[in-house]
Length: 381
Image 1 (cartoon, rainbow, N blue to C red):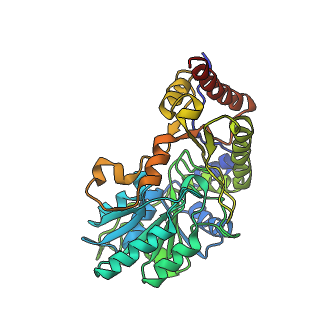
Image 2 (tube, one colour; image 1 turned 90 degrees about the vertical axis):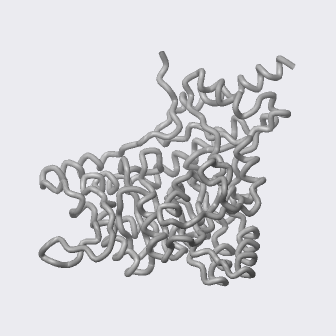
């Protein structure tokens, strides 16, 4: 039986084992230690941020970010709709309510015009959101400048969810470093991984310092265990931080490999009737964390779900793009500005195997399976 071709798997380099061995040899197995400190410093250098706090997941980082900008019970938070539920779940953790903003077709990210209209509408009724969560989707930056300008116009902090966009650029800078707070993820399927982990970055040292305090159970400075605030166990292990340090050293290689995957797919499939790839927006460089395309079933001869099932039968993992959050049962009572673009992308969109460790043979298998779908459907007409 041929091995499965998976969507996006961890890809270790040469240095991770060395750093992990060092943690074991020095007995720094606790969720603090020199690798954590070094990982934070090296990550700041990698993305161009002044301050960072390493935590146990991107979701934890986003939860802390929302709390640190003052989100509380009864508040509204604007959030991209076309994204994973982890972008909005922390809003609910704090007793607040998400309001979703549709995507533009150029980047698949939050539509700046819809955000502006939503802020204007809420300002007129005296109900501005407490924050805006801007997601950078599938390794591509949103159009940050007009979104940040709109947030600043109304005095609303912008939090960047760059969980999928480490290594991308926006006008020469790293997405995640423009807002009040930015967050990143090192989940097992991301560009680089610590198996599980995240990072919170900010130009405001008080934010990252308070994040570290809250992530460490909010323990007051005292010789005994004293707590004046509710805290969280969101610390990153020193062992996992060692993995992260090794992964950072190969970040540019991992981005190059994923961009190569996308180029191979586009060259082989881009001229098929009904196939369109996620555009690369003109304001920066996307990592192509996942290569995504849309299928017009009338032109291609099969719809997204038929293609997905056909590839699954050949042990090739492909997935629909994120189901928009305004369509999720858990958020059914939440407001949404727009929604048609995200719904269409979900209806027709497919994510292809995109790991940086895919072989040429793996890519050929995926390509041939998709081409076969088109041929089979065409021949059945």
